[in-house]
Length: 612
Image 1 (cartoon, rainbow, N blue to C red):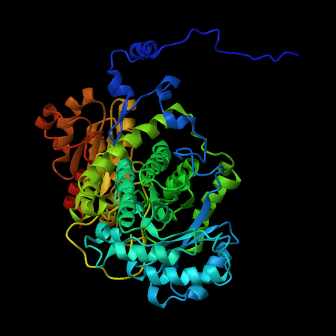
Image 2 (image 1 turned 180 degrees about the horizontal axis):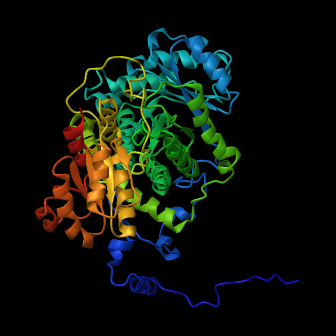
Image 3 (image 1 turned 135 degrees about the vertical axis):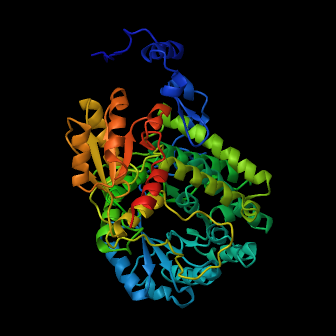
C-alpha cells in the first residue's frame, strides 16, 4: 500500500510576513505595532512576536549536530548532566559522612567549599568515594589552590582513576577583584602555570575557573555575564599560551561556573550562545583537536532574585532556572536551596533542591532529549541575537586590554553595578516584578527570625574591601528592609480601603491598593463598599486607621475627594487610588498610588511618617 501523507496546510494559501503584520495592525485598532508587540530586551535587541523559517535560514549553527563544532547544540550526544550539591566543610569527617550519604540520594557531583584549606586532609574528606565515578569539585582560597591540587592528584593517581576522573579546583583570583575590589597579591600567571603542571597526570581535572556566577548574583544582565565570561576565559587562554603552554593544555583546564537567571528562554539561549562563541575563541588559538574547543559549564541558580518573605516562591524560580539550564545542555547544575539567603544549609531545603533536579530527570525525562530547543525559530533567533550582543561586549573588553585590565580599571564592576541599579529601579516601580515582594505579597506573613545573612567567602577569611566592588544586595532587599522595619516597629500601620461608587472600579482599586501596602507589611482593612463618604471615614476612624485609601472611579472622584478631605481633617493619611492630576491635587490630595507610582519610594515615605 502506497504511503499516504496528509498535508493539512496545503489547502491554505501561504501567508507572507508582510500580510501577517498587516492583519495584526488591523486587529490592534490603531495601536503602534512595535510598542505593543515587540519586546525590547535588556540585552539590547528586539524580540518579534512571530518568527518563521526564513528568519533562521542563514544561521549556520542550525545545520550542526549535538557534539559537533561549534557545539551550539551541545558538547556531547546525550543530555545526562550531573546533579551537583555543594558542601561546606567544617570538619573532614562531617563533610565525608554527608557526601557519602548524598551519593545514595541521586547526587553525582560533589562540591566541597573549604574553610581551612591548609589544614584539610583530603584523604579523610574523600574517604570511601569512588573517584572514577563521582565528580569532585573543590573550592578554596587561590593561595591554597596549588597545595590542594597536588593532594587531589596524588589521591586520584593512587586510586588509578587518572583517566576517568572529572572535577575541578576553584582557582579564581580574578573574583577577588570583583567581590572585594582588591587585586590578587601574587603572580597569577605563574601560579596558574604551576596548577596546570600539577594537574597534568589527571586529564579530567580543571584548575582554571571562570566564575561568572558572581556577576549573575550581582545583578548583571544576561549579555553581560556572557560577554564577560568569554573575556574571562580568553584571559586564561592568552595569559598561559604566552607563558608557553599549548592551546590544548590551557583550554582543557578551564571550567565555567555560570549563573542562571529567571528569564527562561533567554537563559537557554545564553548557554547555547556561550558554547558557540567559546568554541570560536579557542579555535583562533589553533588547538590540535576541536575537542579543546568544548566549553565545560556548571550552572548555578541565582541568589539575586531570592526572597526572605514568601520564600517558597524561590522554589518556583529555581525550578524554571534549573530547567532552562538542563534544556540548554550544561554539564552540571547546582540548585540553590530556597532558604539559602537566611538559613544555613539544612536537610529539608537541601533535599528539596536536590529533588528538583531529580524530578527533571526521572519524571520529566529531560535527560532523554538532546537540545530540544534546536530548530525552534524563537530560540535560534534568541541564541543568535544574544551571541551578537555578548560578542560585542567581548570585543570591547579585548580592545581595552582584556579582562584583567577591565577589572583593574573597574570597568566590569561599574558596568554590572549600573545594571543592578537599573534593575532595582525597575523593581521599585514594578516594571520588573518579583512575586511575593513587590507584587502579590503574602499579606499576613511575618519574617520572625528569618533575617538575611551575608553570602560570605567560602574560605571564611576576612578580606580587605576596596572602594569599587560588586553589588551584594538582592533585588528584594530594599523592599525587605521596609517590611522588617514595619515588623519590628511598636505600631503596625493600618491601611483602610474606603470603597465607594462604581462597583468594578472600587473593587479593582481596592485590590490594587491592598497589594500595594502589603508590600510594606501594613495591616489591611478592605471593605465591600460604603453608601457615603461619611460612613467610610467614620468606619476608618473606628478602626484607628493610619491610612485611608479612597477607591472609586475617576468620574466620581470630583465629588468624593472634597468630602473625604473635609471629613478626615488630617486624622489619617488620605491616599487616592488613581491618576495624579492637577485637578485632584487642587482638591487637597497629596498622596496618589497607581501603576506609575514608585512603590518603594512611596512606602519608604509612609514608613518615615507612620512607624513608631
